[in-house]
Length: 112
Length: 115
Image (cartoon, rainbow over all chains, first blue to last red; front, side):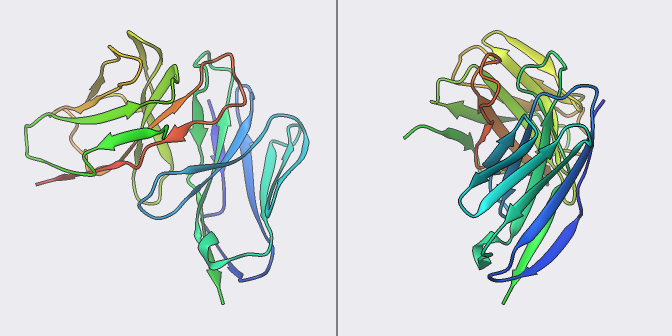
């Protein structure tokens, strides 16, 4: 099976940098996704990692270590609009194609 | 504009009633998914379909049913057997299994409540 752990809540200051961690235990691994979800809205795709290392996309970066079962999402130059829930999702070798298992999400609050 | 459309946005169910949530996509995606999201919990997979006329149970399929008669459509029926249906329901789609790095794209969701 799959188990994914993320912190429940985090608070950071506008303009700062925040790192949201995700650890996972899976029966197989075939990629990790990060999504952003504002309250009452659909999740939107942020990043994808399948190999070890850092993927950078503007203010957002995501890191993966497969040997440690660990990923983080790094948000730089925080803005108020970054206040949202951040979901970590893992795809395993379940024969279910692109089937994902989601963590419970990390609620990020950006303050002035 | 390509995307996923879910309807209705809000839905109310009476006791003993079946209700159907609509999900349509024009992204030409082979795979479609239904998730349930409860407060403080992550998305849990109800059913998924990798191709037309085929679908599989997810982690919490009891009390739900689906059909996949067309590539564009994947309706979800919440039956009277689902005793705790109040939740936010999200539909998603993705390219087929041969395109491993493609993310799932989500609709705007349907919020279902019990009357």
